[in-house]
Each structure stands twice: as structure tokens, then as C-alpha cells.
Image (cartoon, rainbow, N blue to C red; front, side, top):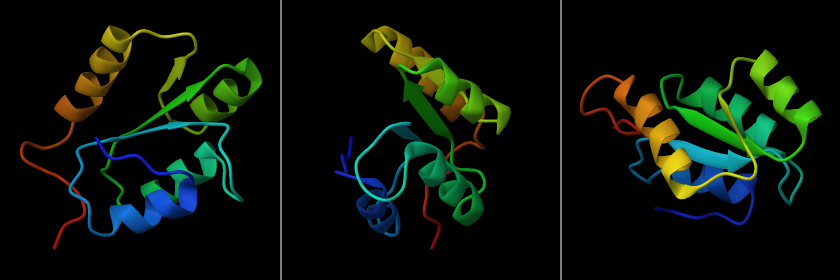
Length: 100
């Protein structure tokens, strides 16, 4: 697991990190929120799965309307594991990002 303090750092880290999926809160510090991060990831790495989490139903509905899966708070670790496994399993075998 890799952690980033904000979306800008997450994007920087994704340039070199080998990841199978990204999980981010919709509400986060910095200039870009989680939906903006997810949209940027979708643009740069279209097949990289992104799971958004939120405690705000309006923001969750906005993310879902844009096609992103959302895990509502409160959630348990088994909930997270299940949702991420579904996303990763839907990705072609062996794919991690970024690609060389």
C-alpha cells in the first residue's frame, strides 16, 4: 500500500509506482478532490481501477454518475478488500500501472 497526502502527490507517485488499483476519498486536502483525481487517472491510465470513498451522499452520487464505483462510509476492511478485489479482478491479468 502506498499513501499520498493529496491528489498532486498521488499523481506524482503514480508516475513510477506499480499499483493494481487506487482508493481515494472524494473529500481530500489540496486543490484537487478525489473525483478530479479519479478523472485524471482515467485520462492518463484508462484501465487503472479507482475506488472512491465518501461519507457525503451528494458527492457519492456525483462520482457514481461519472461512472466511478463508490464505497460509502462507514465501511469495514472486508468491505474495502471485496470492492478492490472486484475492480482488480476485472483488470487484464498481470496488469499494473504505469506501463513502461
